[in-house]
Length: 278
Ligand code: AMP
Ligand code: FE
Ligand code: FE
Ligand code: ZN
Image 1 (cartoon, helix red, strand yellow):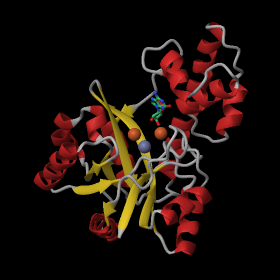
Image 2 (cartoon, rainbow, N blue to C red; image 1 turned 30 degrees about the horizontal axis):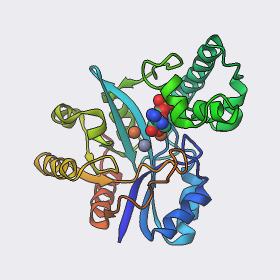
Image 3 (tube, rainbow, N blue to C red; image 1 turned 90 degrees about the vertical axis):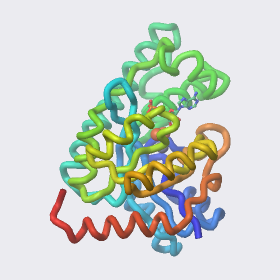
Image 4 (cartoon, protein in one colour; image 1 turned 180 degrees about the vertical axis):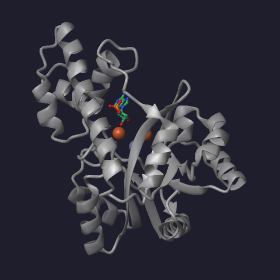
């Protein structure tokens, strides 16, 4: 009985449709899953309906990129109300910023002599939450780069000529946003952002959990985060961070979260549902 609580679809920068993601989840025998697209909960209705039909437990979620000091901190929000107005309004702003950022990246590419029209990226992305992978795929589709790696290495990686930093809000605001939508806020893949030192302060700010299991975490990372979760009394989560075929091979199935951790998340969500809002 396993779960995967970190999955992306075409509603952000994953390549799977909800139907394709469901097929993968069934193939890997998942008992529960959470959808965590970047800056959007749009896919949750379809994914939730498909999971219900298939007898897979579904937790609506999202992933937000935030900052704390000079560190980038990714947060996962689980169990949020997907029709929560303040949440939807804030997400619409993040999506607008993502669309402007695509235009800026394309303008830089144009200056560099790559005549990619912005519409090529938007057509390919076909979602409200486009990101660098879409620009990269458009570069490959247009024949300007051999593959996505080349697109990132030449143009899109941090400090490369077409890189535009993403507008990120303070982590405390994102935690509050998730809480007021009655969700729990979980620190995503802490080893990727070297954010160990931030866990104490984040707990003070209201963090509810740590993503201990992630494909890019080593066995010792997992052990360290499990110990920290225990020390601070935090929820433990994990998932494959699967983006479909985006990076060559889908990662779904490589992280199997024991179902007992999902039960703990659900218990906390149930307690919050009956408690006065935070
Ligand atoms: P963004 O949020 O628009 O800055 O894009 C971040 C996304 O780009 C994440 O899903 C990353 O995994 C992906 N990404 C970052 N670097 C690379 C790379 N070198 N090749 C492919 N994808 C990458
Ligand atoms: Fe992503
Ligand atoms: Fe992330
Ligand atoms: Zn992710």
